[in-house]
Structures are given as structure tokens and as C-alpha cells.
Length: 459
Ligand SMILES: Nc1ncnc2c1ncn2[C@@H]1O[C@H](COP(=O)(O)OP(=O)(O)OP(=O)(O)O)[C@@H](O)[C@H]1O
Image (tube, rainbow, N blue to C red):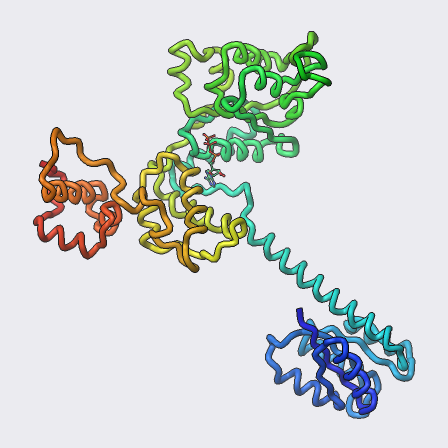
């Protein structure tokens, strides 16, 4: 923080005195006996000079303190100004304050008063600066509700989610692990009339059956060992809002029956209680299981399935919406920067190509983890393929199944053909898959006499 003080006064004695006082306190001091020289200095000075503080005399023969102040405010609006009024006219002090002076000192002033005022000025400047930094940090933070949906496939899902939000019907979200089911559930809640109320989420697979029941429905005192007092369940907490039941496919048959009652009647019974309670909750359930198959196999109640599946949303896996990969990666990068304090600012073209070429079995969550790891491992401002896991940059695809070992040269030829076929002859991407440079790949293509027409030929 700048501790720079300009003093402008036509009386040489005062200038010397103030300079000595303030230097003794560790401030950097510059003195001007003429306001015109001060203005010239400010005019010529670089804008990046420390803002600091100006102690400005009110009465000077060359230019009046008020006129000097006006010019100073134009030249350096961030410079704090304290007026020194020798002749005690309160009117001009008030006028100076209106023009933006921070305070004034009536001459003669005791040394302590000067020190206190100067200290306050710098403390205030520091607070303003801290505030400014906080605001800009907040601005840079990514809104946690941001949903990236560039691909037509995912956009369709989001459009539908927003449209169904208004209906208040229960929603069932299907999709592989990490595809964004909770993100979509939150989007439905935000777009619904319940958005002023709570959105609560329960992972039904994370808890043992009895614990899940008591978490959902609550319990009364003495319901089981350790139940020292009545405890409200999540269902009651979510009253008026939305309850997201993640991994619904893992709920036991007994609990399925109890959930069905809530969905049908809006009623539930806390563990150990006798009288039912009523709630008004919208349910959004999600699973990565094939729930229809679970119904057919008798593991999931058909009536509960239909109650939940009033509206079904099916989230495509990330490998089927490659247009989302790059924007998601950049989104996660900007989210990670404040979190990890990383200096990475961009992802280079080669690393982006590797991200696009990968199959993402763990979907968006895996991509998020890869970017977080990358921001920690990357050196400098650019994330290169070296900061990505080997499975992305090495030969990621499984080798062709064979009965016995192949001669090495033939195995090499086949892997190259496989990579070229998989990437539809995008040589840069194929080189990434193979973990070799583009130049080496060109050489190998010549060597093996490969051409797009033969790319499908693995024999
Ligand atoms: N379209 C998206 N835009 C921005 N972030 C996303 C998007 N999809 C997923 N994410 C982020 O990816 C991570 C995984 O998403 P989410 O938890 O919603 O997946 P899920 O399908 O519910 O996973 P699981 O099946 O394991 O419960 C979260 O951190 C989420 O914020």
C-alpha cells in the first residue's frame, strides 16, 4: 500500500517542519512550495505513481487552495487531499470537502492530530483497495449455477428441463454417473415456482437402509438406541421446496413402499411415530441404472417408477456430445483458478485435442477432475498435454484382440490404422492417441503406405 505524501505550502518553514515530522514516521514525502509546480508534477507524472495523500495549503499567492484542489481532483481522482487552513475560514473548508477533500486541519495543529489523520487516510485507502479486490474476486468467481450446454443433444435436455419446471410434476433423470443429473435437477428447481424454497439432495446409495429412512422421515425420541430427541427428516425440511433423490435405483423394497406413500398421499410417518405428517414437496429422482430393467426384474416397484417418471429426462453421456467438452474444460478452468490459486490461464490446442479425443467413461465429473489436476500440475500459464493423465495422451484405446502375439512391426501398423480409423483420419488426434508426434505419424504413414481408403483395413 502506498505511503506517499505530497505537501504543498508556500511557507518554507511549514514545509520543512511537516516533511521532517512525516519522514520520521516512515512516510515517503515530496514537498512543493508552489501549487503550479505541484500541478505540473502531477500532470507529467505517470498514472501508475502511488496515489497517496496530499496536504494542501488553502491560501497560496500563486493559486488559491480551492482552485488547486479542483485541478488535482481532475488529474488524480484517487489522490486523497487534506486541506490546511491557516486563517480558519470554515466556509472554504466546507467547500473543499464538497469538492472531494477528505478532511482539513486548522493551523496550527498539534503533531499528534496530524499523525492520526494521516494514519486514518491510509487505513481508509487500504480498505477501499481491499474492497475493490474482493469485488473483483467475486466477479471472477464462476456462478455455481452455470450450466454449459453447447451441444444440441444437451441443449434439448435443458430446454425440456426448463419447460417441465413450471408443471410441478415429479421428474426422473436418467444418465450415466457424472453426466450432470444433479446440475439438471437444480436447474429444474431454479426454474420452478418453488425456487424461493429449499432444494435438498439425498444420495440414497450412500446410507444404510435404516439410516436413510431416519434421515428422510426423521425420528421421534426413543425410536432406536441413540435417538435422544425428536429429529426432523429431510422431507420435512424440504417442505414447499424440491427434494432430489439421487441413486433412487438403490432404495430397498421397504423404503420404496414408504416413498410411494409420500408421492401418492403427501404423507409420511417418522421412525417410531404413530401419526402421519403431511408435506408438500416436489420430487426429482435420478439413477444411472436402467430402471425399467429393474422394474422388469422385480427389484423396483412399478407403481413407484410411474409416479416418479411423470416426466423423464435422459442425459446423454459426454462422449455423445463432444461439442460440450471444450467449453466445459474452459468453464472448469475458470472455476479452479480461484480455488487452486493456479497461474494457468489457457489450455493449448494439443491438450484440447486430447480432451476431445478421449471417451470420458466418468463423464463430466471425470473431465472436472482432469482439469483440476491439470491446473495443479501445469507449469506457467498454459496447460499442455503433459499436465493431462497418460490415459488421455497415450494410446488410450484398447488394442485389437488377437489369438497370439503379432510381429512387432505388424502390431505397430495395426495400431496406427486403428487410431487413424477412430479419428476419421484426423492425423493430429491420431498422433495424440498413439502418443507420438504428428511428424512421426506422417513418417509411419509413408513407411506403411497407408491411405484413407485403406483405413478400415485391419487385416
Ligand atoms: N453441463 C454442465 N455444466 C457445468 N457443470 C457441470 C455440467 N454437468 C456436470 N457438471 C459438473 O460436473 C460434476 C458432476 O455433475 P453431477 O453431480 O450433476 O453429476 P451426476 O450425474 O449427478 O453424478 P452421479 O451420477 O455421480 O450422482 C459436478 O461438479 C457438476 O457441477
